[in-house]
Image (tube, rainbow, N blue to C red; front, side):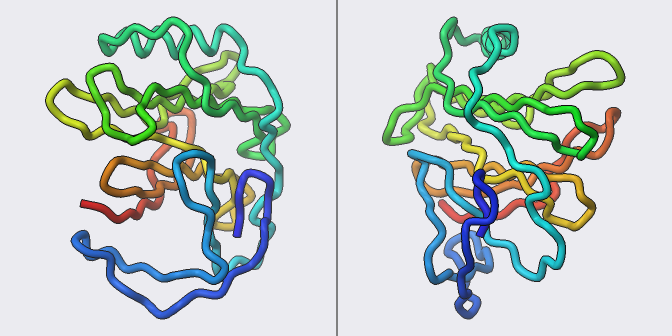
Length: 204
């Protein structure tokens, strides 16, 4: 099991079962993975013969004001006003092992019961150095609507090397009022940015 602190332990998997109604194959773990939108959870990795966390993420820092400003500007561009967004997570980490840290910011405004409204949103930004200039990439964004309770709350669960190439992927959990899912985002290159390398979930 892996979380933002690194390798957090081991677990034993059950036989395969199917999640209804999405028909997603699933297993249960013993001990169970910590799951819940109140705080980041963990992921399970099987078959890895390499160091799955070659470089630890740091969650102790304070997000710089210019990165907050970029989040505020993005939100405003979607018709929302939140000049002092709630910071759920701010992480720094060396994604590719090049000695240069990336920054990741999660800001959101979502009710505790996850029933969204027109003011609800969740945003995940990553700032990365491209050549000699930093660029900010939108990794995840969800916005509520006046006539629909659906909105996704995002939480970064792990930053780990999932395929043994010594480059780490960003694992983000998403929660909504009737289900949840997890997506592993892989940074491909400066032209293509991040892509969803693996995603799974269960819900209505």
